[in-house]
Length: 281
Length: 295
Image (cartoon, rainbow over the protein chains, first blue to last red):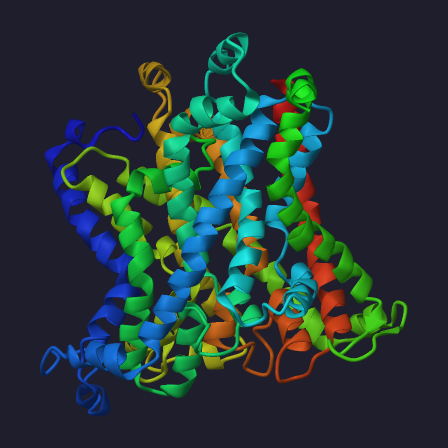
């Protein structure tokens, strides 16, 4: 193990480590802690310049105001409407593409695979004008499905990379044995490979959820009104309206961050497996 | 039909499975790339008639000061983003222990990556805010005068990059933590018996074993640096006086904002950014291709 386990070091080092750990964490999360505290500060405190002292009381009213008196709940729902179909669509498509590229040998296999991989890395701006145009001409501009459809297509690149590598690591004998038994290819996909893909599906689902929930660029390009905008774009436009109302900006930020954070804590193992692209096991 | 399927299914099945995903990817990703390159030779407001103007957009770009500001900032982003690698590795080494509660520490350190860049941008805007921002106060306390980072042309890009590094370091850290978990313990022990310690151990024994993690870390950091849009848009909207623009933001500004709908000019900027990124993407693909065909 590297570095040397702390239990094997001198007692002074051990104590130092135990102090350094929380200290480093607080330093690391300082912007987050600051915003979390500000979100609970009453507006009157900020008006009087009390930014760092004790809040005069814990102002849950900031959150109440956002929940009942702003477009935030609407934006959150819009985000869900885009995110959930994207997760389902991208994972479903990439189960199939990943299977095709991992199991079959055909001449253009690697070429197709690397097109998916390369496409996944391109800058969004090179797609922006044509995708916006396409969405407009399909009559899907400023709708949740117009945005979700693009996300499904784009995320398929990353998901294919992940699924293909995952299926490649499964024992191929399983598939061969099924073929000897005369099982059709479609049944092999459904009954032999799919049941083994659960961890990969879980990993991709949480990752894609987070990516799409946090997407800002496409939300601003493909949606414009409060009825369809996801939370990221919504928060940005609210930020423009709430000039200097930092308690509201902070509370809005915390709310917007909550779903992916929950997702991460519930599915931590899968999340990390996904992020390392399955390459670092 | 079914007899034909039975005889040829091994040949047909891959295309059948590929079709839906590949079609979507073709329509929404691959074809738009070609279209963007095509549009970059036109003068087009996005609605009316487009006129072919040849390379005029590119000629204009070469004379545009805003383009050079963006390009310069992109280079700064790229160089400074690489700091995520050593810092992420350091934090990973710091956290790679088995004390009580370490799992919670690891996830809390990873936290910034899970949060949307919009939220990260807002958090750092608050952090830097003149008069009451935590960072502003710290600088004021240390030097006597505070600095309004986001309103100062000298510091604004660095301020935004610092915000971007926060989640990026977290990402690199998690890659290295998983990598460190897989370092062969017997090799470490053997090296220890040979007297290797500290930096020498890290350099000669650990880092070579972390190569796969380093590769992914470089890929995601380069892509992350060149994709930077959200933070610039949220924190400064390119300002002050356009000094914090990067190519991705400059493109959006030209093509789709209150400054006008210059789709052709925007597309030309996107093509330049695309060309820059293709240099890196080809490198990654080349390495992955080599790994694939070696096996």
